[in-house]
Length: 349
Image (cartoon, rainbow, N blue to C red):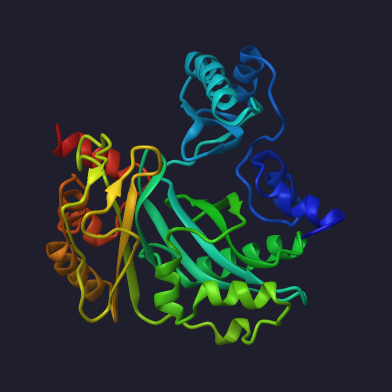
């Protein structure tokens, strides 16, 4: 267990207000905003006007899209503050809310980091996680089809600086919002392994769980930043038990589970034929990950893998993934955080 000041620093990374303050101290780019808890809707409006619309109103303890509102004017800021605060109190037992600038045409790009107890921290490239619905990730890939080598290096170095500032040990993820001009800002740090870690494993050849165990045992990292490779391209589709376009939950018994296979295809799942999907938990029942020498090859393998993925007895979002893999804008890599919502509005009921 961590004790002393280090424990407080690492714990603070799970709090959006505290983590942003630590990021500022570590000279990591942060979104302009008011980084203290706001007490009233009237104060929220004045702060929003000072920052300049549009703004994001966010719960300090938020996550998964809960406790988050975007405001484009005084009325939306006033109403958004109250609803955000109430949702934060009900969801997290913490009603602290802050405001920051809303980045136009944003992408969600995150840096995987790994640190040991000997002061070594490296970054393992980035993941593009912009395909989201209601702030929940749907598709992830590595590397990003958007950022340049210079941006990748700058983001990686800032992620390492932040991790070193809190003496972070183990695998973790520093998340950034990236604007259309590749200006990037710290969003939050996840001090854990994430669902999308397989795409990083595919392109680096590293087993992140193994590395976490070695670090926890007190070992030094056995490689340096210069040793980290970027081999090919990997894409992950999250398979959820839900209506593919209405997104209503679909619990029940799986009468047939037939996952895909073949070169470059990986499936992470706990389900099987006759498995009962309970209604009480997250709807994700598996992940299909495809790795190729190029993005085009990874996409082609994913299309084939999704065509081979058969689940009977419940509904899943596999049909949604099949359509997205054929969408021209996604194929071009020209997406943002709002891409999926807009796609659904334009193509679906």
